[in-house]
Length: 102
Image 1 (cartoon, one colour):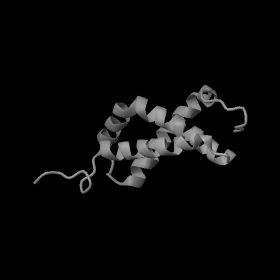
Image 2 (spheres, helix red, strand yellow):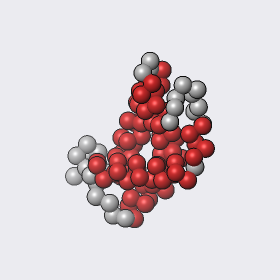
Image 3 (cartoon, helix red, strand yellow):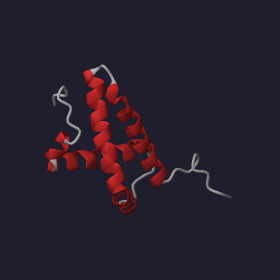
Image 4 (spheres, one colour):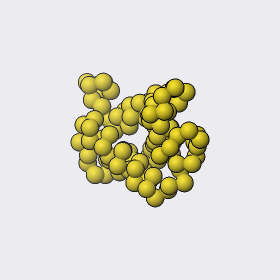
């Protein structure tokens, strides 16, 4: 019996799903709403982080034997992203937009 990725998600497919959502949110950067632009900005930062750390993050999920539950994967990825942001505050200036106050 072959594995169907829709019925048997893998760490990589769940990771890619999260990355895809970030990319979709990042596309809203041209919104007239300041709040939406801020969310798009953070989604851009998160997408860059996920792309750059993909192998490390997936390996960490596998080594910790994390359950393949969407909410657990998203919590883990958010936790790692915001820890990364805390240690690298200069990232907030990377996509600086003068009307985005954080």
